[in-house]
Length: 472
Image (cartoon, rainbow, N blue to C red):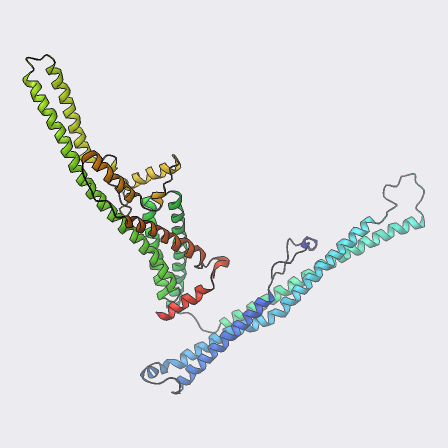
């Protein structure tokens, strides 16, 4: 039940001091009652097995555990006692809670009535107010009006004080009832039944792994959002792959401990597989581009050397005619400079492996200075130049560049290279869309985070996860 509306400041409170949902407490009572009954029933079965009853459990496996059955049954009885204590404590707490709700509401009404009475008293006439010093003495009627106003104001204040006291009694009563209930529950826990070191270790690692999953899930979501804002940044993809790997391992560990969901394992695995598919597609495009550059480089070198050969022939001719032609010497010098420029261009192009603006690009799974330099250029494209590219967003920039390179190499160097098939673009783009679906639609639309009110976003999640657990 939400906080009740009203002017609680009349009772010196900033808001409703007794906020509680009685039906929810009744549901808790029913839940703990059921749990206690189920545990007691199981304990009774184990007790009979330990006493030699073979009607429910027989065979070699029964003989192997029979000696431990009584011990486990005794532990279960103690555990049932804990649930019964919670049930009894809550059952005894409900009347005090209901009374506190009733009394606090009544106190608020009393305070509102007292406030209204005080307003009316303040509006009553007071002949003594603003009376001149040389005015005649008050008449009996005037004095009666003054006394009536003072009496009304006093009654209003007394009513306000009584309302505050009534609320305080209600709050003190519910606090006392809460302490008594907590004391009953704590006493039930002091039954000699303790977690083993293994249980404590399991609980610790379970909490740690769940925290890791939450942290890296949100890291993955943040990286996915950044990849949309600034597409094509390889370091973001690398970090997303690391986050996906950590999340998958943690989810597998949780599921193996019985503390997690196999559905989360599957979706985490899907996320990592999608990253892997992206790597395979990128690698294929990278290999094709490297082969295309190598083939184009041969065509470029042949064209470059052919130009140099033609210049060398012209140079030889001019050297022979240098004595007869005074301009031949200058021509030889010009040709030498042209030959040097062509040679430098060939060496520089071969060293940098950049042909017509096309070059090999670093891959995201090899984080290094080269990749970071490439990423800084992409970040600058978006933040400084406003050049947000959809081809990078859908990871088809390499495929599109291959198409452009095929045209350029054929046009400029007469080299025909193999372009990537059209389906390659659809696989790359489809992989990105599937990754968004897995990250945002499942991760932020279906999967519970365990934080706040979204622990069970879709009712079918629990059923699907439970079915997978039983299937394993």
